[in-house]
Picture 1 (tube, rainbow, N blue to C red):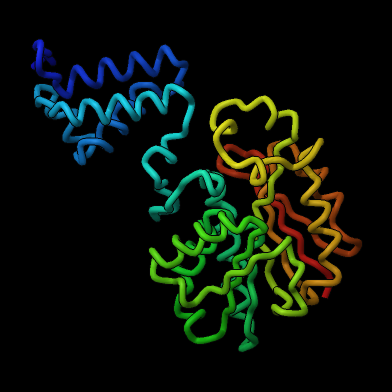
Picture 2 (cartoon, rainbow, N blue to C red):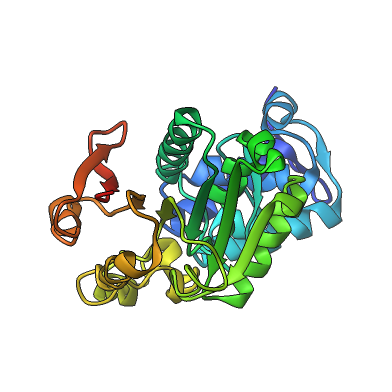
Length: 301
């Protein structure tokens, strides 16, 4: 059945065709998909239902809401900010302009972190302290806490999530609480590992997705970079400024033999590895496309 529109009625099929054309004109690389996702958002129906019912009439208020979100998408605003959530690592993570949108590639960082923690928990009865620096939306901390809730509740694992942005930390707390793990994760307002060894314990595992985009690329404001918080993106002239600062703090703030897991940009593997302290073991973990994505640094014990 073909989609149709009368003078007073807009159908699902017509809304999708018109929406996709608008977004295609606005240079969206996924115009049709975006139109489907946004129409699903404003109607409450899933995409499968929309595709199966192109003849269904839309209420005028739905058409108006669709126009509003299409305008935002035409201006380049990310879908995750429009819908206020991102499906990530089988979790629904709240998203807004307070923090970076969780990327699919960061799932590798979360999985690598959980593997390292599990290995340490399996060695002996010694408790493990893991610390996510620059937690942002809290996505990685949520994933670790949900997977390792029992170890957290038993006191075998301490998980800390910190950020320099009070707004981002607020969002992280909301996500932790939304997934029922707010009570087992310690959150802290902190500049990297500043409180470690003082107000907070020295971590055995450090995980961080620090800003690693060069300033000039952030300045160009392409795509979502024009909408996400600069503090979560800008890694300085070469993208490594925050990573250098973190490495400089390790000796004074982490436990002996600690493991550091860092998300890095494509092509940054050798440059970041060169920052590791003497005696450290460094491994670059590629993503599914074979690109440098996570740097693992095992410090001497």
